[in-house]
Image 1 (cartoon, rainbow, N blue to C red):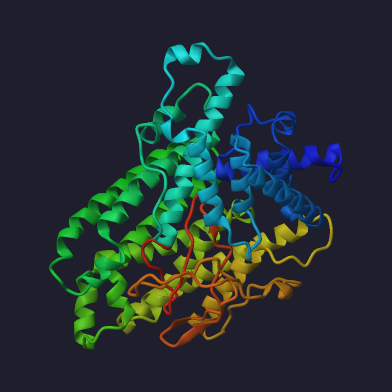
Image 2: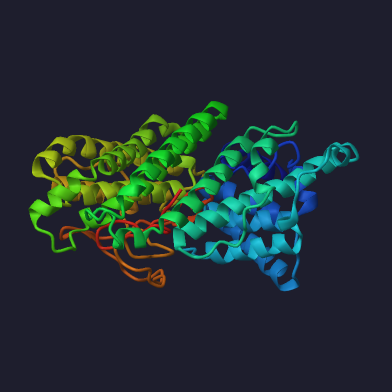
Length: 496
């Protein structure tokens, strides 16, 4: 295509397969060589090279992305459909520009494409079918299956994030994911995919049952006896999350997989156990201070689990700091939610002595996370071959966390900014914005809409963005965040 030399294309392709593909589990190194992808799809090759060049070759990235976009337009106008086209479209949403807000539309496009190709009728091959196929045919068939599993995860995650209906129903095929992961041709990245398919099978049904916002409105956290029967249900689900985390971390071989599994487990616990706290911490009912303290006392398990999960998420960033600069957008969004929840907790209705006790740990966790992302921003900037002023996702996250820290500390000892990072201190933007704990869902706001989050009158003058995927839920495996005036989220808007 004349945009890169053969040597540069080979280097970018190898970098993608080595450093980025493990986070999304989309391509198979046994099948997807540079020559194979070049032969199968110019669009997929362009998307792979563009994503790979995003950090290290920003000027080349712009040219490659423009070329990939033109190929996307051509495929759409001509009605072309293939596994490689679906993969290329998804790749354009994983590590994208913060202002790009097309993930939901692109997801619908690829899911419908898959259905046109008959993927919704996939079933496990019989031994006779496998025996009749060459190794390359088996790998290509498994490539189709993998793509449909990825779309299933993407679809369920975006549904939970945006409160929009999912398109792919669970089936015998999706529920056979563990057997699929044990097949002879399975690769290490299939473990992460298996982990998140099973997580999505659990979470989407659980939150559909709980009813999210209606749970908060109909008595959760307000002393209403309707909520008490759910306590045992929460305990069961908490146990299942722990089992899921233990099971899949034992199978995961790569550090990034260990990190993602642990991180999403902690986020799911935070998301679920914060449901009964919506009214308790929201500060919008007419209860007296004594009644509020009684409500908090009756929800201590939910409070402690939510708090400890948010802290665990931030501490995991420090534990796995070496992989942070490569994470997709969903991790940034989930991090922003955990920090926003802690800010809400600190400025909510907790007793002053509790706030005093937890403040050091909260501030230390947020400060450490901001430092990790600031280091990630340095790595992203230093890996660039050419000088660039591009604002990276790590820089956006670091800026957001630093602003949260300022609100917690009053600006005392909060700086984690490295020399030369001042240009990164710009407010992020968001693709989808939805209300928080105790507001009904509202239509998404436009990207240019200014939003300010508050905590008891304290403004965090931006809303973190880059929200685009779960696989960038806004990156495939995670969730997006939409914050209300408390910097908090509603069920269905930010979920792993």
